[in-house]
Amino acid sequence: MVENYREKGIVCGSDTLEIRHYYVWGSKKVAYRSIVGVQRVTLAATKGRGRIWGTANMGYWTNLDTQRPTKKEGLILDLGKHVKPFITPDDPDQVETIIRERAGLGPPGPTISAPII
Image (tube, rainbow, N blue to C red; front, side, top):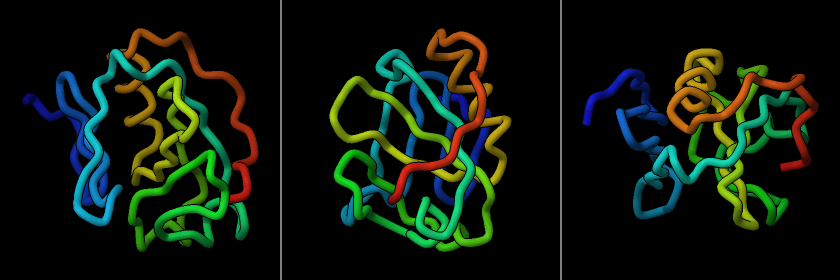
């Protein structure tokens, strides 16, 4: 797997996005072809920033990110399923660009406020 982006919690490979520390037992690997949408969101205390892992909203799931309280933006991935991964990469611009290119998605829409997580 060729990696174009790597950090503690996220690895963007050539065919797969790996969300580390997603489950208690490990990573979630997502094929880019299975991503049907990505939405950039701004974080607030009850809207992502205060949650370092898990969820209070069963429509989303956050991987473990102890630095999330210091971050201002995140990405929500639409996999066409009920639960959407909520990630907060260190460089959301680069990760969003990679996902959009590899998943064949169009240009980004407006940044919106994150849901209650």
